[in-house]
Image (cartoon, rainbow, N blue to C red; front, side, top):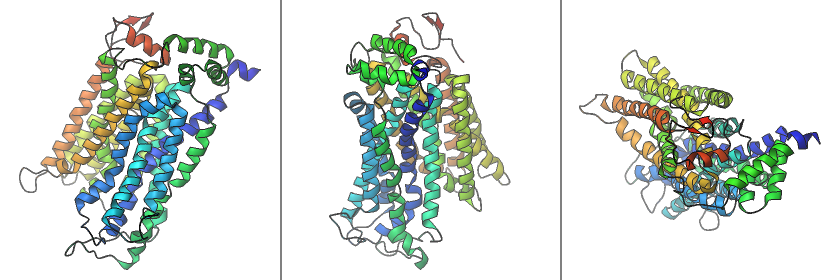
Length: 506
């Protein structure tokens, strides 16, 4: 009886914990390539029927991003037609198939251990399948959490998804290190048509090590695909398909009966139809959601996360991996800051202060990179830049994307916003190295200060965008978003609606 009156926090946290496993797989799948790519490169350079160039290696290393764009683009359609739960089950299956297929791309069609052009295509096919799973999970996991979480702790719980992403990346770094053991990385040299010289102690890395790294993802992927079968569908989706009694049952277990009845009535009031045209609430609603995704990537964070060892190595650090791992722990610490302050401070203050902190860090790197005696200042600036992202744009962007759209367009709107996120992820990641290595004259540091100076300027623009255009959603229900965007007098950043003030600034 008491649970029916008050709801069960343990039940809520258990289903959220299962959902954030999707975030962990998101981080795991995108970071696993970092430990495997050198062995993979050496393996395919032995192919007899084609030359495995740097261009091919770049495509192979990033091919999962193609799947991410596809998966995020499909997420809205699948979440609306299949539901959040079944879409996440599909994501788990795709993760599992990709892990096993990437580890053994020869399965059924090719001879084991014989690299070829066709085998490379098959390997990339499996990586793209995994990317589709990442794209689905990146959009639907925060959507699922936001639709089951009470409004007073929704931001904190959705932020846990970002923590899981960062934690997944850290886990795979350690898994890769454990698998690699004392086997040296291969030394790859092009000779003639692409043969290579490999230290004999590194041969295991080329033939087997990278397979274990990709295959290791099958363990968390299988666990996720299994556990997600036992969580409920979200109440918002259940109401949208006419299953009010099931929705009330889930809401009661989470909130208690009295609160559940109130929430159900509010959901039914806003879900007058399963879906509405995308621009039913005006263009500003979609524009704000898309630009949140664009700025999360355009501030340049993945240029730091993906290329941290290269950056620290170019700075003259003796052991760049140690600094990279230290940065990983700092990232987790500051993600926890967001989790425990988002409901107290709100979304907008964290985004604005995070943007300004990133700007300080980026400008610090631009000014000091390559300057003799300034290596420590440069490293600290990179840490400030990364840490500022982790308590702001990292988790808070996902919180807002999951909750800012009205119920009847959420599936499609989230899909579009997340697709833009992956597109700009690809743009930033693929342009960093060319920009960073630009020179006006031989030996100058033009590319260094231009790249981070550009990121710093974008961070300032991001702060202004949040201040002027993004509404604060702290403490508001998902149904309040329908009322906010439907209110014809609403100007982002100002105005009063139903006695609630949406004030300019923070």
